[in-house]
Amino acid sequence: MGKNKDIAIKVIKEEYPGISQQGINALLANIEIETGFQTFVEIPQSYDAVMANSNLSSMQGNLSKLRGGKTAYDKLSNNEKLGVLYHGDKKAKYAGGIGGLQLTSSNYGGLTDFEGELKKIAATLNMKPEDLYNKAKTDPETAIRFSLVHLRDSKNVNVQELNVSDGKTLRKQHINPYETQGVATSDQVARN
Figure 1 (tube, rainbow, N blue to C red):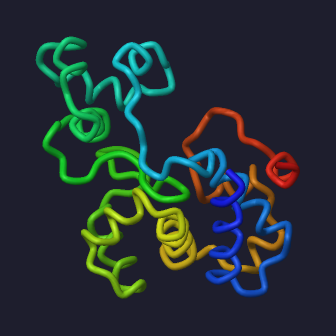
Figure 2: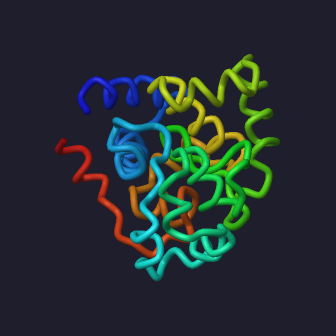
């Protein structure tokens, strides 16, 4: 976690000049929740885990469209599983979360035009969309920058707001407003 956390702090300061330690901690708390500072692409949950979690009704609905149930699901690649869970289509081009804050492509929730958002962020970072997509899944610096540009430019979260935010407030208002699970506090992340 140490190296990637240091990278996160560097990128946060570059994308949000003048950010306070409180703002940095609020972002770090959410990056840690989403990635553990380790994995910048979503790993699909097992069939049983999805079906057992009452908070995943949209995924359950998508999963119910798959012919062959658990047996068919278990034979899919991770990308195909994400396609089924998030779009009800194993051939979905983009599915699941990527980046430091797990920007998510799905047929439900807040982001309805993932591909358009990808193009917009790619233009800001002077990259081709496909190159950005692939690099944001594997490179910590790109993954974090990808998410921060989205937060800043599409969700209009400015440094002044971050400077008075904590991890819970930032998460509830901008990162994952539909989430019903707990969230680490900024102080917990700062201690790591």
